[in-house]
Image 1 (cartoon, rainbow over the protein chains, first blue to last red):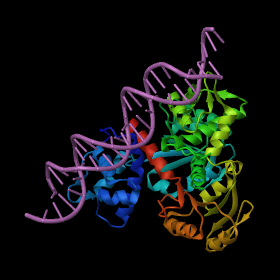
Image 2: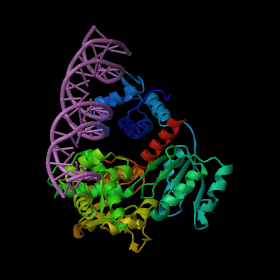
Image 3: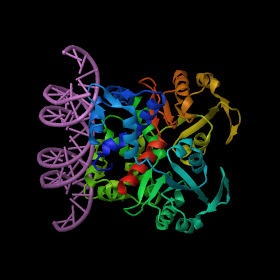
Image 4: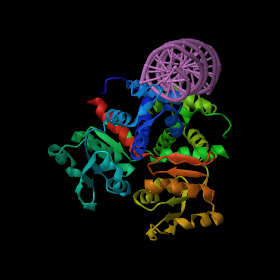
Length: 205
Length: 205
DNA sequence: TAGATTGTTAATCGATTAACAATC
DNA sequence: TAGATTGTTAATCGATTAACAATC
């Protein structure tokens, strides 16, 4: 499946296509045109066709795109055709929010354990100690670590995660973390988003 | 201040510059070169100079950029030189996380009230009923509404927010919301970020 | 002064838009 | 078949990179 090169600009749009196609499928809709997609998602029809063209022909001239084919294609490209084992590191507000996020499980992300500096319980998990993360990873498979600790310890904990052998970090910690080239980091910088919002408010006035 | 046009690509980078410059200031550092900035932030030195050039000369040849001037400039451009009155709509996990997010207050975002469908208490706020939002906005100034409700009611609540006269929405609700042209929406789509992460994991294998 | 580094122009690269033949 | 809509090429636009004179 992952044969062709997909441009970065297109990759960024894939999740939005996928989410919208899921929604259409739920509504029982069978096909969609590039024009309809473009209208809803605020892209252009050209852009949609250029994007879809990158992963080979998924549409039919005169008809449009078949929802179930499109969904399957996007799901495969995004790597959502498998399960991911996840640990949450940091059981504060963000860690809790992620643990309770319903979409998480539906998409195949399975929370295996939660770590913190304080023992306790979260959902139906006994919170484990961060110092036990390394030994945990020795016996259990972990694909993704959710980094949800305070910013002053984020780098240290990131280093622990990296050394433990976990290859992907979903970083909520509000600081850029330095890890080796082959560790994948995807950031949620809430403050950056808020700054963009205040920029836009300010610009309008 | 907001005289020159700043390109969208540059705008997206502004929060990262700002965050890093704050960090340097805290460390007592007085100047920084485009090269140093580029190394840390994974931009290129050319890019940094092109970006900064857009808001007029803030550097000095042979020296670099003065941290305090740079910080002040970025702060002004981002609109962080004032306070914003914020209401949180939805007191679930995400609403709680935002309410407790420490950076929030430091940056001048002031939580004035929290709304939900269930009464209760969060931090030191008595949770108000969502149906009272409109009357609340009639007497109180609100610049930003944080939309943190379940996805199935997100559009309805967004419409209530919009009709109440609030002009900016920080949307955590995992669905695209439709509002009028002059309402500013900034989205945090956690699932999109997660999909990009699984895409990158899958691509590497 | 000499070295360093900006500010800015020009060249390159990538992404978006426009257009239309192919074809369902 | 006729109408609709894709797939794809070519044109345009915007962003990044390279280069270097200006100058601190």
